[in-house]
Image (cartoon, rainbow, N blue to C red; front, side, top):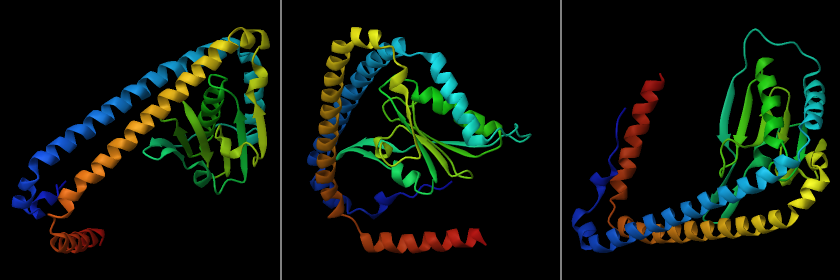
Amino acid sequence: MEIIHLGDYWDVEGMEKNKKEIIKCNKEVGRLFRRAYKYLASARYVYESIEDKNKEALEFGLTNVVCDTLIKEIFCGQEASVIEGKQRHLFGSAYTPTGWVEYTESILQNAERVYYLKGDIGSGKTTMMRKIYKRATELGYYVEVYHTPLKPNKIETIYIPKLKVGLTSSKCYSQKNFKLVDLESFLVEDIVSKYKNEIEEDRKIFEFLIATAISNISAAKKMHDDMEYFYIENMDFSSVNELEKTLIMRILKYDK
């Protein structure tokens, strides 16, 4: 492993002229990011509050039946493989300075069948996708598993490339799907009604916390961009470009 230190290509004297301003900007960037992360952490607790109420209302027996039916439909009764399939865990979405960004349509662009799992927080979407991707690996298939950024143990999308089958809870596929699986229909209405006002209140708080977090991330990004100006005007980019060419040549030699 080799560390490439681009600081070697700074105009040190030029950087030192702006030392106080750079330190000030850097501190403010750190403060804004810390504030944003605290709001995101708070949002997770509110998310879990909604999740707990819906879990109480969920009829797990019915979701198990539907999940079993989906497994039979997707895998056509295949037997387990001697060689277990591989799985890759990634993120397909994020909270960014410009807001919520997701790439589900790109992830599933080659899928011929996309199952859309409709359901509120805690309605069993992750449980169902976890069972299906684990079954896929038992059958020897490679599976891509995409998690949610706020609570990484939650699953947003799975894709089985060899079968060209995807399952997702992304609203991008609420209309253009192969099949809709309505998990909200498995919530006991009496329990949902009991918590209706609390869930509505939690949702408003959740949306406020997320919006505030994004606002702080955006402010941190702007401050970071302002700080970059001090580096850009004192950087020897011609030497950096020469370094890039040298590194590429070295990498290509290794490839041979």
